[in-house]
Length: 83
Image 1 (cartoon, rainbow, N blue to C red):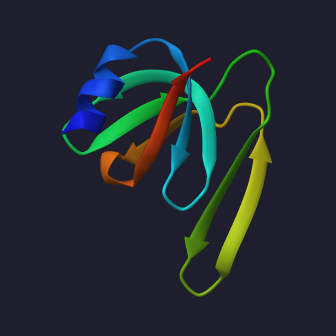
Image 2 (image 1 turned 30 degrees about the horizontal axis):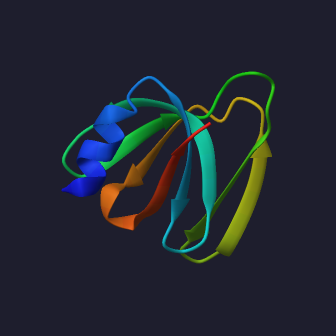
């Protein structure tokens, strides 16, 4: 529940989020619900790296300047910092 309230305090602000699996994400928090935080990773011409596991294909990586809205589970958050 603490992650939920921390994210609510940072709503509409630029943050860096670190997850328990060691990934880092930067963006503006656009929404928070009881399970997820929604991060707008577009903006300022920055390139965002995303990664994920795709069944049948293994792990994959991608880069894009306009990656859009990323949803992260509140359960996976390790650290949240204003930037």
